[in-house]
Image 1 (tube, rainbow, N blue to C red):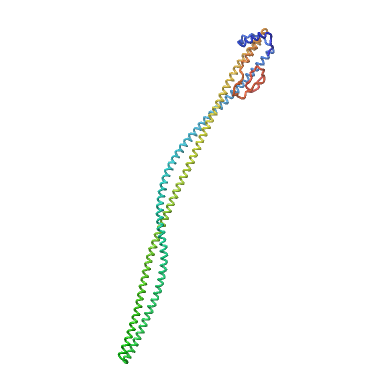
Image 2: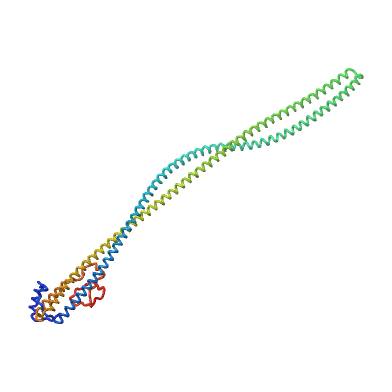
Amino acid sequence: MPPKKKGGKKKGGKEKGAKKEPPPPNKIEEEPLSELSKEFYLIQIRDLEERVARYQLKCDHLQTTNETLQKKLTQQLEDQEHIIALLNKKIQEQTEQFAELDDQLVALRHEKETERERLMSEISAIREEAQDRLDQLTAENTVLHATLDSLEEFKVNKEKLESELKSKQERIEELKKEFDEKIYSLEKQAVLDKDRLRKEMVSKVNSVASEFRKVSDLQMADTTKRTIQENMSIGRQLHRMSDKTTELMKENERLKEREKELCRRMEIMEATERDVTRKNITNQRFLEILREKIQEQEAVLSEHSDCHDEILALKNELEQAQFTTVTLTQQAEAYKSSMKGLDAELKEVHKAHEKTKDEVKSLKALLQSATFTLKSTLMASPEDETNRDPLVVTLLDLLKAAPNGRTGSKNQIGGITSYKPGDLGLVPGHLPPLQCQPKR
């Protein structure tokens, strides 16, 4: 501070008057300054020049930052437009794909329902037909089992009858052999007896004829009577043998008829067995056909189950695509919010830039005013030294009127700190940070 002079009250009054109405620079009374005042004003001028340089550097830095942010914003806008266009294209493709998948899904569902109803009706008809056929075959099988049991019984009876027939035939053969032997023996015996009788008769006739002459008629009558009786006995014996032969022949005929009846029944049973076997083969073929149809229906149902699995897979893909679309939409919203934040930050930078420009302009005006005042003072004659106090007051008012830093701003860019070097108590605090060392 310059040294105080006498007449302080008067100077105080003048200072109050100067504060109320500061005189214009061209009307200030010029008076010579002391070396200390000149040095003080030179220091103030250098500080103001340094401040102007710092503000200019800050302005250039903000201009560069503004250009960088503008380029970044332009790039972000281009990227955003490209991303939005790409997302819109993807969303449109996904929407078209979803619509196509929905149409395919609806068509597949309709086709599946139609095919399912048709197959269910066919399966119901086949089941009913198979059940009816199964009941019929069960009834026929029961009848055939009964017939088979009767056939088994008949087979047993047949074997028994065949054994009996065989034994009877053997017996008949034996009886026939015995009969033939007996007939042969009887015929032989009859021939022998006949020959013997003939011989005996001849001998007896000869004896009788020989004795006929010797004996009487009574003796001839007794011999004839005895011969007749013997002939009658032989005739009765031959008659009995003939009856027995006739009876044996009738028994043989009866056994032959029984054998023919058994053969006829055997042929009937064999034909019945062949019919039953043929029916069983037909039933087995029908059951095989039914089994093949059931397997075909099961294969069709398996194919429809696979179609259902494919539909579920398509539905899962559709849900995944919808989730992807939602995610892309959220990313687009995040990009939009990020762009809004960048826009807000750019607006803040623009505001800071404009404010810095205003401060630089005001500092330049203040510096020009102070320079003009100092030049006027320095160019004044030494006789006007008494008028220096109002000039000092005017300079102090001009320096106090300089804009302060942005102490009240909440969003300080670059972490603004207070200026320490060259702080003589007159330079406002909270100035922007130095970007480079100012020239001294």
